[in-house]
Amino acid sequence: MTWWRDGFTDTYSYALPAGLGDDAELTFGDVVTGATGRLVLNTERTRSVDEQEIVTTHQLQTEVVLVQGARVWIDSADTGSVAASLSVRSIERASDLGGGGTLYEVRLS
Image 1 (cartoon, one colour):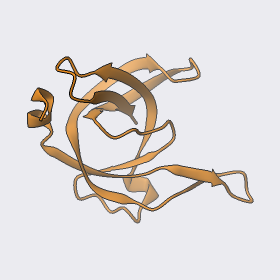
Image 2 (tube, helix red, strand yellow):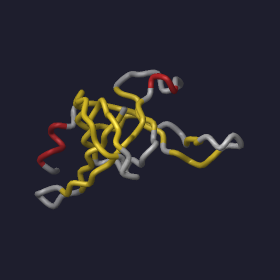
Image 3 (cartoon, one colour):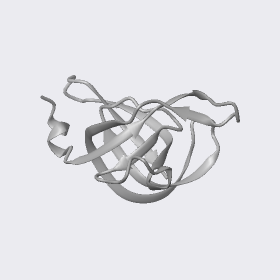
């Protein structure tokens, strides 16, 4: 067990992009529930993976490998509602100092 897992007290669900539909909009895979992490309400200006300036509203620390554009539902939000989801806007990898895994800093809005 790594030292930072003790702080993973927030649960969330997520769906990863699976492809493009006929209308060129992203389609998503199945919703995965019960993931844990540490969620912080934190509005900040940052840069996305493609270097665009964006404003994010939440920061999530997790071991789950999320990708830009993935949908995230916090706690008991309705996973059937796109409006209830947040979108992954940027991801930073931060290795565990104890060598027990990889921690990701994910910014959402």
